[in-house]
Length: 253
Image 1 (cartoon, one colour):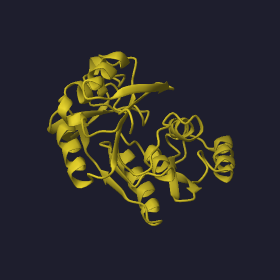
Image 2 (tube, helix red, strand yellow; image 1 turned 90 degrees about the horizontal axis):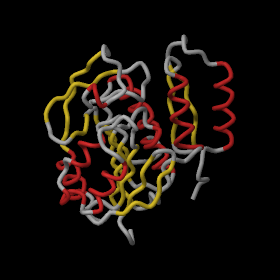
Image 3 (spheres, one colour; image 1 turned 120 degrees about the horizontal axis):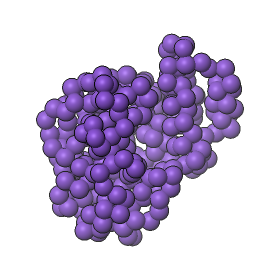
Image 4 (tube, helix red, strand yellow; image 1 turned 45 degrees about the vertical axis):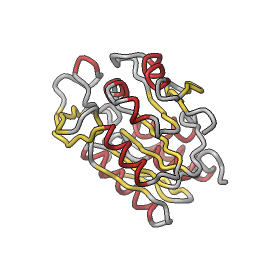
C-alpha cells in the first residue's frame, strides 16, 4: 500500500504554496497526488489548507478503508474522499450541498476517475428526512450548515441556498443493496446537523454499517456520548476520538 500520509513531494508543494498564496487571489491551485489532484481555493486558502492538513497530516480519519464503500456526508472539496481512495477504498459516494464546494469536489473527483478510481458526487444534503432544506453559506467554506441557526455556528445573515435533501435511512438502504459484499463506512461532517442525522435515523438502518466517522461539534445539540450510545444499539462501538472525530465500528469488522 502507498504511504499513509501525503507524499513528500506534495508536502513540499503544499508548504511552498502556503508561503505566498493570498486570500485576495481568484481561482484555484492544485496538489498533485499519485491517484489524482486536490484543488484548493485561493479565496478560502486558509480554510482549505487546514482541512487538507487535518485529513492528510494529522490523519484525523484512520480506519481501514480496504474493501469498503465509503459514504462521505459533508464532502467539502473532496479531501477526505481522496484520502479514502488513496488508502484502499473501493468506492466513494460524496454528498456536498454547497455550490462552490461542489464545483471543487467534482474537479477533484474527476482527476481520480481518470486514474481508474470509483467516485460518485452528489450536490445533495443528507438529513433525517427527504425534501428541501435551507443551507446557510458561511464565509469559511467548511462551516456551511443545514442545522437550525441556534445550533450551528453559521452567521445569522448568511446567504442561503435551497438544496434537495436525502434521508440518511434511504441512503444507507440504497448503498447496502447495491454493494452487499463491501464493508460500508460512513463519514459525517455536518456542522451541527450530525445529531439529527444520526439520532433521528432508525437503528435498523445502521445495522448494515461497519464503521462511522463523526466530526462532533461543540455547538451541536447533542454530545459525542449520545451519538455513541445511540449507535451502540445497532451493535457499533467507539474505538477512538481523534481531533474531535469519533471513530465507531462494528466489532470484528
